[in-house]
Length: 82
Image (cartoon, rainbow, N blue to C red; front, side):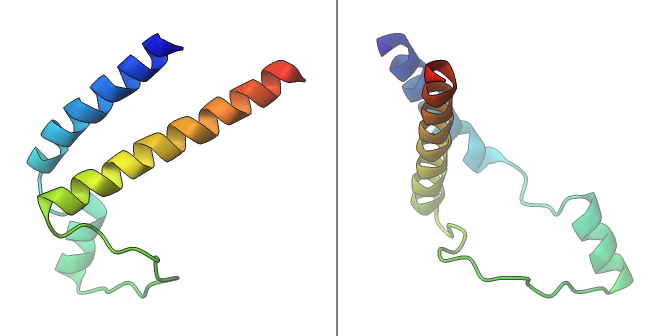
């Protein structure tokens, strides 16, 4: 169990360092939509907006990592017990 948490911490630290270096250019679909002049209307509004600063991005990334891990771990425990 400690090995899992150590790995999770290492992954979180590496992602916190590397992800802010990702390209801010739009992906292929977004670039094509911009060229053609299409705009997408939002289907829903998220309760939290994208992080505008490096710190906000890191916090939201860490929240996502730990939530994903928690849900996966919980489902694995349920499957193992069944």
